Image (cartoon, rainbow, N blue to C red):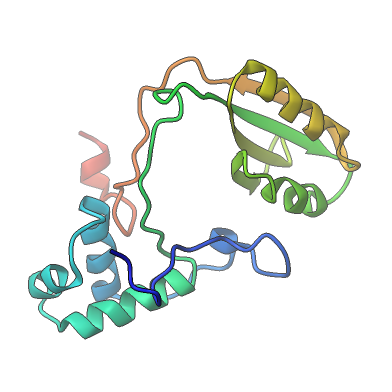
Amino acid sequence: MRSQDVQPLRIPTSGSERGPVAPARRTDELDRSIIEALQANGRESFRAIASRVGVSEATVRARYGRLTAEGILQVVAVTNPLGLGYEQALVGVKTSGSPEHAADAIARWPEADYVIATAGQFDLVVELVAADRRHLLELTSRLRSLPDVVSTETFVYLEMWKQLYDWGSGMPKEEETTR
């Protein structure tokens, strides 16, 4: 049961805030320990986390509140859309100028679960989840009809080999990446 004061993070889709693409915020070792505990088990109680990291439950609750309010942390159930029967695609988008207007518009779509500005061949990369192929076609047509969109390239997911969100609160140490 969720208390009224703890709500899931919704990344803003209007105004100047850009959610996770905003400048990095400072986290300390305690923040990272809380993040890693929740990545291992998003349902673990604040009391259990507090006991493990050696602080009070109130401290963990306060840190969790700050981390979620600042857009650093979300605790959600992650699914494999392909496993649930949905169609999923990654779409590279080229725009005629700054990608901000197109990104803001696309970020409002419930079917767009990932919208990022990139350097390289595409100005934006968008992940779409659709009910079926017809729905995916409608979404890609909507993308192409946006005023600033010049072209798109769609990569339909056929099968998923790996989708992890447990990388911790920092980059893997070099010795971990060479194994």
